[in-house]
Length: 212
Ligand SMILES: C[S@@+](CC[C@H](N)C(=O)[O-])C[C@H]1O[C@@H](n2cnc3c(N)ncnc32)[C@H](O)[C@@H]1O
Image (cartoon, rainbow, N blue to C red; front, side, top):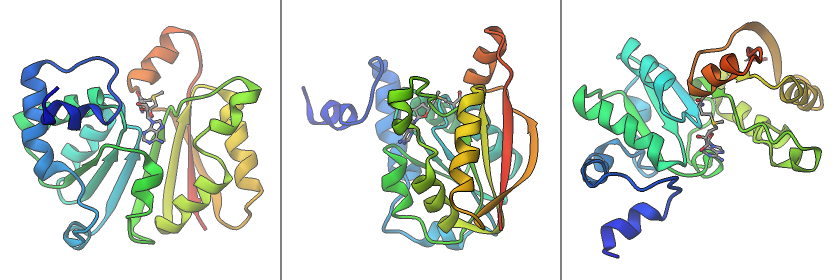
């Protein structure tokens, strides 16, 4: 295996990329990748949004395109979804976006405090079995960490088609009072997993929590 492929496969890959996509990934990640040592990105825009686990990136790219005057950072540990975003950004470039291809916990350690106007977590992995609940991303500690990085009055937007997960988050938030309050409950965006929920007859909701 050559050095390039080994670098790529260090991340999570559900199936191999085509050689063309793999070459594009390597070429474009140099400029698109969030450089944790370079703080210039945080001095460029008046507001910033983070999407965690953007999957195929449909919702993420919609925001990036709709608000060229705002900064966006997308985090996804699966290379296949990231490669789709890179392809779109190669065809139609945008200078207001950075990507982080690894675990969100690592990224949050390298983001300034009180800088994000919004964080989106759309259809996080539900881990429905009781014994797996502890693997859920949006637990008390993670929500507290998000709080550190959101601007006062900023929003944590969470969509799920699993009522038990939505209740779980609400309960976790209640154990850390004075951090967030529910600002609105809206329809969830029709991402890949949002559409899957519709096909399978589940109702999705987006809870928007405001930093107090
Ligand atoms: C169920 S999918 C939802 C994808 C997309 N948001 C959607 O609505 O179609 C959950 C996504 O979160 C990503 N993810 C899960 N845990 C993560 C973590 N710790 N850091 C970064 N991404 C993560 C997964 O790779 C996966 O793509």
